[in-house]
Image 1 (cartoon, rainbow, N blue to C red):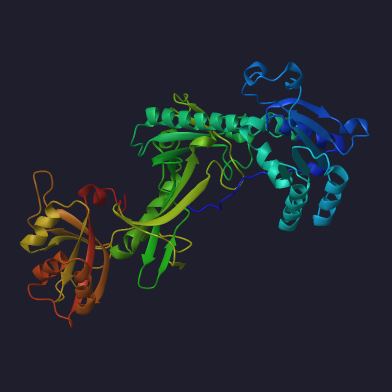
Image 2: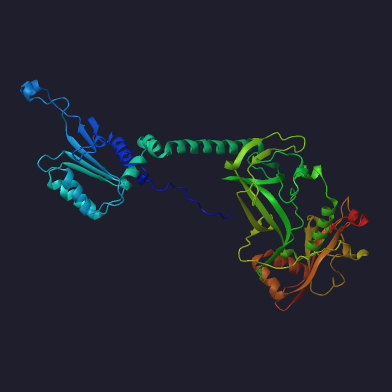
Length: 502
């Protein structure tokens, strides 16, 4: 399941949108926490500011009293005295080295310099501008100096302690976003834990009803003319839990794969995913008949080329608005309320692959779609049903068949099975039990394979060589031509009821 990564971030703060006085107010707010101040004065608003937009005095740090030092009261520091700081604010698009030199020349008196100086501007400064700033202020005897450009101002505003300033001037609150994210995570974890309680740790083959959060017509399907194409609620069978949500089965279709040609195909018209409750509610006889016809065609494919096309969908925990664990009289299963989308419905992503058997899967990557399944399918039928003729198998193959209710592959090097054709039915000697006289085989595929082909397969499956040689009664050779007959086990009642496919 692939999905494009989306990065969420904030754009640059637009300091230029503030008028000059509001920009001064912003800088003053940031300065409050910069030092321990005796007083901060907004001198720029009244005009005739002597170069000061903001003037501030630090709290005077004293380590001893006048009496301890032996100084007279006249020599003691006044309580309101402290280091003088000069703060200038420039809401300009660009400030180069020359402009900075001009600002400092106009604002800083070298004969009576302030202790500290801050120049704050709504632009970004170059290295040359920083160097000129440092050079000019050091030459004038300023002890501490700081150049705050747009980048430095953003850094300060994004600190948690300044979140109230960020919100007051720009309407952005990272703290509220964090609280909102915490709420989202809590809801996601609650949804996951509730589903775990309802479905258990292994939710395989359980029914859930997915319902569109925007729908108000449930359970009346006729209210929507396009309900078949875009259902507002639908029952699905669960597959497993995913770290991000619940995976449900969307489709299981008869499929074909040829690894040697890198080809595949499937039939979309028949979907073998039928949730239990849905099956109980309604039966579509036309679809059932089509399904039998398609399965009849698929059964006659070589076993190595049969596959099942799987399509699963992921419902994210964080997309679940509400979970009704009881269901109702119409659908007696959990109802999951999700916001459906026009393209993918309730699913955040889907996954498609081929299932070769319950333990082997094949990716569709690198495979090209071929046309194997026809547009129309014939109704399955039996070929010749042999009543007086039986197969006599070797002990090894007969015992395999006796305990295998699915199917078997026969290998013939001397044409003793030449009379058999696909869909024929024949019994096997000495395979009966107390319930069945003889096991019946329906031939599903017959082809000729060379010894070289079979020996190559034996490299991947070593026991296969013993199986083949046990049936042909000799060693398998490269130049052999072997009839390969695949068959399924069927039952007497299928012949009686003329049901070649069930």
